[in-house]
Image (cartoon, rainbow, N blue to C red):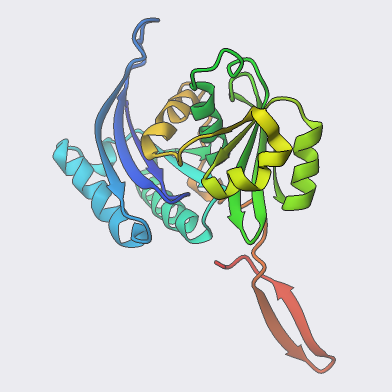
Length: 248
């Protein structure tokens, strides 16, 4: 089975092609990475489709050979998410293949679960990701990051209080987030690097084996918030503001 993984949710973007064996053994994960291409920051829209074509060409494959497409659906950059999701949805619909959606926060939890700490594996994890302008994406996970309890969008003050009240590790990506929550998290805070598309692969494989497939028409970005962009509509009664889901 061939799986194409796309990640344009964060500062690191990439495309990966993997072969997954249905007859894996306990000592063999049954996953072979056939190729991986990193996308440059702020160049996702220009590089994504050519990267997919290059990756398939290097392996003498066509889009029709791919059995499923996995995409990181958020939360993350509005523009980045739309680039990745639009491309994957169009390709999946054209080929008639299913989509697997992956949470950016869940990927960070899976990275943290692999850290060399005797306490990390069994502890609850609070994942914090910078959303800009003093706001944050938040995820609460258990079972080595495999079980999602909740995901939300939070302002700094409210999230600081939530972190203080919850047991477990606080996992942050980025120095700015680490600084913001140092006092609230205390010694239970751990920093992890921004994930790459390779970090998304284990979760994509789990989704594939659990057969959690989605029809392209049903897939949307997991923004966790609406944009604060406003369209002003003038009426006889005066201007009326309507929130719209447009890139910020």
